[in-house]
Length: 115
Length: 113
Image (cartoon, rainbow over all chains, first blue to last red):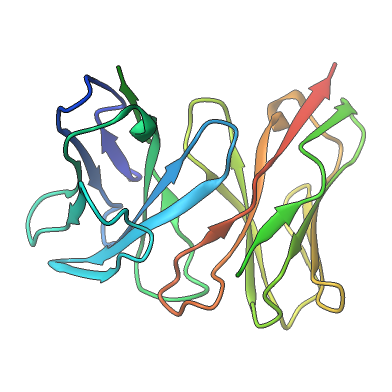
């Protein structure tokens, strides 16, 4: 019974490159959340998606960041033209349904380092 | 705005003692709270949750207490073990009905042998 899977676990990019982070939710889960964690800080919500729909992107930076959750395949968090400030751990969580009271299960994260 | 905060950044306890980790929240309308444990290099792991219609909930070696009057949440770990060493976060959905979580800054629990 696989949990939430994320890859790659570690990603190194140079400034200006693109970063693609993948998340496969738990089996039977159709709701995906992305969070970012800076060193020594708590997690900050970025975006919430269901299959083929972005439900809440209130935590996404206005530029360079995008997310998708296609009908088939994993959810993708895409960061274009990365800058050093994008260095962080990015976590994906999934839940079976939407809303308060639904436990979110987290993946192991992708640690992005921008040189 | 909404915030979730923890009282202490680091808590050091002796193995076998009980640990108490505190959390304050600002949104009086919050009705669901969760504690997560994050070990080094890993993602947050669900520990226990509580709804606002309860003031106490117990799990295996853990108890969560909720005081809505002062908007305070605590996590108690009985007979703390070295494997309990981690960062502990409280989280709540805030005013959103989409379920996105607002996390506190985290308390690092260090267990001394």
